Each structure stands twice: as structure tokens, then as C-alpha cells.
Image 1 (cartoon, helix red, strand yellow):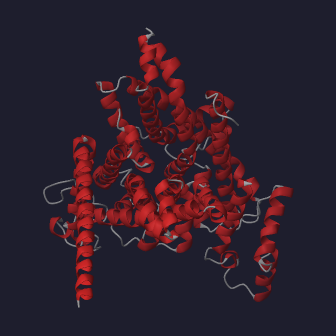
Image 2: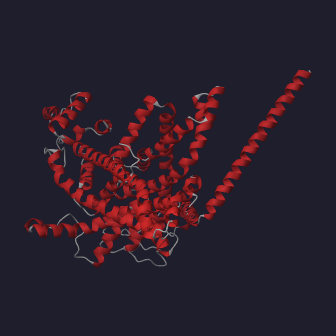
Amino acid sequence: MTIFLILSFNFLLFRVMPGDVTRIVIPKGADNQTIEDLREYYGLDDSKLSQYFTYLENLFFRGELGESLTVRKGSEVTSILGPYVLNTLILVGIGTIFSIWVGVILGSVTAWKRGKAVDRVGSAFFIVFYCMPTFLFGLVIITLVGRYVPEWPIKGAFGDEYWNLDILGKIGDRTLHMLLPMFALVIETIATFSIITRSSLIDVLTEDYMVTAVAKGLKGKDVLHDHAMPNAMLPVVTVIAMNVGWVMSGSIMIEIIFSYPGLGYLTWDAVWNYDYPVMQAIFMLEAVAVLIANFLADMALFKLDPRVKM
Amino acid sequence: MTGTADDQLTRTLARFILSDARREKARLLAKKARVIWRQFAANRAGLLGLCTLVAFVVLAVFAPWLATHDNPSSWSWTRVNPRYAQPSGEFLFGTDYDGKDVYSLTLYGARASLIVGFLASLISIVLGTIVGLLSGYFGKVSDEVLMRLTDFFLVIPWLPLMIVFVMLMGRSFENVIIVIGITSWPSTSRIVRAQVLSLKSMVFIERAKAVGAGGGHIIAKHILPNVFPLIFANTILLVANAIFSESFLAFLGLQDPTIISWGTMLERAYNTAAFTSFAWWVIAAPGISIVALIMAFYLIGDALDEILNPRLRRR
């Protein structure tokens, strides 16, 4: 249901907005007959309502998302998206998992050592990186690497030699190209997740049952892992799921700055070229990704918290 | 004759009592403000944020007097000043590719950031509060429709949405503000709606209804004052977000190029290869300013959240 509504909003967004599609598609100086033909080809003479139904029908019964208008004229959007989706999935997927892992660890360490030097220094770093826009950090990295390690590749997802390499070489080449964008992307999310984990864990540590656990004579480690963490993780999971859209926005900045051919880069290309079908498809994919993330979070909550009912 | 005198007396008394009540109300409000201020002043991080913010506001307001070069964005500087001059006595933060003084540009840039930050979050607060009130107070169909709309804005990542809106509406300073405003209201509307829902079932609202108060009166006099403290801390975080969004949109070239903002400075630096030629001062001045200003708002918002949201205070 939600998906359906999003599709409808998506359709509306690109139809209601100013900017006539015909102006973009039709070459300058075309005669009236050509314009007529093109309008008919793209179905622009139909009413908005029947355009909408065609859109839904194509999507649900044929799995088609229309044709690209400008970026790759005439080719199916679904076939264009493939490699871009893969690149983004690698970057954002690994990045998110890595930053959840590191963020939770750093957050729990600082919360456990609250008020001590580790916590003060750590929290200061979290706040600075949390407030630093991702694209700014990317720019700093590019500047520094360009100056001190000029051999390191800072553009693209793979080098020019990529297609001549064997499978191991391909993986190595991709890793080399991905390290910097990945680093720039995860630093903010790590800071975000650390802050969330820290504050959530501190909340839990002041609960009465924590005093009980200590009074029982449990060791510090046991208290943290068995009593505090399971309870502290509940809000963390929810907030992380809410942050998936944010991470994707961050990946757009990173992809543009590092010319990394992923969905964000494609969005940028499509926006400048007024390629509505491609934008529509990307919006749909991103919405679906956020919904999936929320669903996974619900599942995780269900597993973590026996009180939660499906 | 006595009747009118009595009337007059009653009216005077009523006015006296009313004005007394008003004075009492003002006194209580001032007292509350003093308490909040004392708690805020005790929070060192929040105070640091406030000082930073005040410093930036002062710099922005007095930019024409503090700047070492008049009209720093003028292209005529290209002929006068050296390109990429190192920071020195004459050029405090060096010069950029076009020979413009980076220090003066940074001062003027604070204006754009602060204006965008405050106006955009004002738009999003007004929108978010209206949507939250309507869906929370009237419920039923309006709730259903408005919440689905909110879902749409929450589910689509905000950045591509903003890019598309700006592209379609045209690049200008006003449009950037409007677009940031209309893409960032959902979080406010969620908070307002939740608060309205819990207020609606409270006894004093029932009482107001029983006395015959209309929907408009209840919203204005009873619900809004109780919603405001909750959205206040959120608002300050929204300002930080708006400043960040502006800088990124400008960096992507979606801002009016004649506006001096930190984002357009970074864009110009990026396009003129400041990054590969290691002209670090061109990047550092706007970059550090952005981070410092966003951090100021974050620290203030965090401190206020702790004060206004007592659940956190027991730590």
C-alpha cells in the first residue's frame, strides 16, 4: 500500500512540476510532423490519468520503468540502472554495516567510560564529525590525498585497465578505488551511530536494574553485555533504520565528488538532463530501500525484544 | 446615575484584575525563562555553542565594516590582486583563483548561511506545525491524507528530492530557501501530531470544550503553547540542517552564483582546481565556518533538548 502511494506521488511530482517534457525531447527546428510523431510515441497527448494508468500497468505487469529521455536516449531504464545499483549497493551496503559495527562499539566504550578521558575525547570527535557535512570531508580527503599520495586513484569505481584484469585483480582494483569514498561516507555515520548508542546506553545504565546487577556481584563486562546492551540496542535499531535515507543522501554527495558511478551520480546526471523516467526509477528504488530497511529493523526489534508483537 | 457609576467601577475593577493577571502571567514567564537560562548557562557545551552563534551573527551584521576589501565578490579584483596568494597581513585568509579576498568573502558568506538557516526553518516549522495540528486535532480523513504525505517525504531521501525541486523551480536564492523549507517539515509535523494527540485527551481541553470553546480557540490558546517547547529544540537542529543543505546545494551549483555563500565559495574552489593545487586556505575558511556554525546550532539544540525534555535530565 505504501509502495503504491509512493509510486503515485512519484508520478505526480514529475508531472505537476514545470518544464515541458516535449521541449527536452524534441530537437530544435523539428517540423510539425516530427513533433506530432514524438508526442504520440511518448503518449503525451493522452490525458494525465491514462498516462498514470499506463505507467502503473507497465511497471506491474511488464516490470518496465519506461525509456530514458536524454542520458541514454531510447534505452530501457531498467537496463541502465543495473551497474549503477550494483556500485551503490557495494558502497552503501558495506559502508552501513561497517559503520553500525564500529559505531556501536565506539558508542558503548564511551558510554561505559563516561566522564573519563576516553569519553571526553571520543565524544568531542563524534560531535565534530557528526556536524561536518559529508561532502566537505570528501573534499578534504581529495585535497590531502591529491597532495601527498598523488598515485592513489580518486575518481571512478575502477581504473582504465579494469577489463583486462583477472577476477582477483578486479576485486583489488575496485577495493582500491572504493576505500576513499567509503572512508568519507562512513565517518559521519559512525559518528551518528556512536552518539545514538552512547546516549541510549547511558540512559539504560542509570536504570535501577543496573544497580541490582552490580549489587549481585556481576563483573563489569557481564553487566554491559548481558544486561545493558540488549536494552540499549532497541532505540539504536530504530534510529539506524531511520538513518538509512540519510546515508543514501550522504552517498550521493560522495559519489558526485569522487565521480563514483552509482545511483547518486546517476541522479545528478539525470537531473541536469531532465531525464524524468530515470529520476522516477531512482526515487522508487530509494523509497523501496528505505522501506526494506524499516522492515528489517522491525524484524530485528522483534528478535531483540520479546515484548514486541508483530 | 448610580447605575453608570457602578458600571464604571465594575469595568475599572475588571480591567485592574485582568491587567494584574496579565502581569502575573508575564512574571511567571520571566521566572521560567530565568530558570531555563540558568540551566542553559550551566551547560558548558551549550554556552559554547551560543557564544559561537553570537560571534557569527555579529560578523554577519558588521561584515561591511570588518571586511578588508569592499565588495569582495566583484570581478574587478581579478586584475588587482594576485591569484591564490598565501594568507598574509593584506589578505588574512589569502586570495582565491580570481584574486578575491577570502577573508572578506567568508564574512559576507555568514549572511547567506544565517538567512537561509532561519528563513528555511521558519517555513518548515510553520508547515510542520500546521500539518501536525490539522492531522492530530481533526484526525480521520485529514490525518490519513496528511500522514501519507509525510511518509512520502520521510521515505524519499531528502537530498535528491531537494535537488529535483531546485532544478525544476529554477536556481535562485529564494527558491533554495523555499525548497529547504518544504522538504524538511515532516519531522516537525510528526512531533506536533504526537503531542497534539496526547493533549487532546487531557482534562483541560475537555473543560475548554465544555465551556464552549471552538476548535480555533483551543488550538491557539491551549494546544500551541504546549506544543511549542517540544518543537523548539527541534527547530534549532533544523536550522543546522538548513545551513548544511544550503552549502551543499550551492556546492552543486544550484545556488544563484551572484550570492556570496560558503557553498558557492567551495564550488568555485572546486571548479578552479583549488583542491588539486593545494590552495588549502580557499577551502579551509568556508569549510571550517560551516562546521563551526552547524556545531554551534547542534550544541545549543542539544542543551535545550536536555532542559526542555526532562527525561534526559536525571543523568
